[in-house]
Image (tube, rainbow, N blue to C red; front, side, top):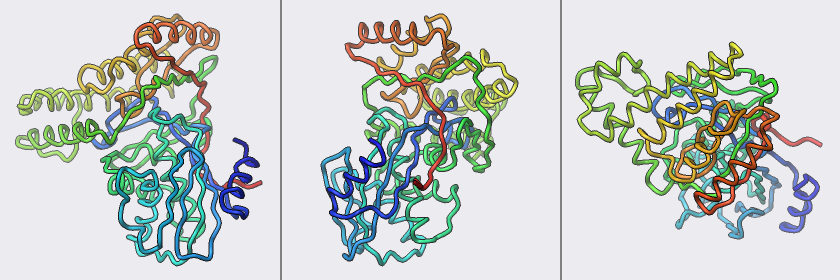
Length: 388
């Protein structure tokens, strides 16, 4: 939808004009998966599509939540904003953000009429939830003059996901949505939140996102299981070498202490995390050196580890990645996001893109019976106000 169409939709919903419009992007993670909640490195970039928020104050002591993507409408008194709604209501995402402002001592005394619309494909693992959280945090930060920086807004979004959606996610998704910069990826240390913006220079190569149309559900429990399994590995390793996070271990360190992980599943989870942290470091170095072929190889290695050791891929993601690896002109391909469905991300030479879409699409239908969609990713800016 265009901005004018969104304005018209807002007027139709609330019989008045929106006073402000904000936007926050979805993200694609180039490499560094399931390392964020383990204190490791990630390398995401913000996308050009995301979530829009249109808002204006009202004369009621309530906040009204509407979305053009979902039929359910919620109208909540200001006194109701700190208790999650039942049945996984979508409004828990923006409500959880507002609750974090209140928890920080911010007084919400004004009601608002809010309308969301997002063009992040639903269930694609491209962080539609984080985009909604961050756009809400950015909007209220601006409107209330609370002065939080973008890192704090990312923390607010993460806390909302933990407390209102029940997903114990790391910080990566919200951080990328808040801190993204056009044509740059974010090399983020998830333990310290120190980060570098690294130019993504891909001469004659595009980032292609392939959507399985097998929606992932991070709140299904499997994601939180992985968090607990990694925590068990930390606990067992700490008997001989006290650590806070798996990412503190180099590969050599891990080789020395891995025998302490007596739980076989936790051992495989830890092996992935330690290897993935090193792959992410190596991939960023390769990109900075202009060695895109090496970057692509590391992406493929990442997927194999996520498939075999972390077990978060499945038929659909594996079918897309494995089909991509067969296409001449593909430098690397891997699942991106939490897994259990969603999307793959591939580096594809420009001249190979039509063949890639045709061959990968055909093989995917043959293996799964599903039709994939393909997007040429454009790396965009983080959260901002729409100024016309």
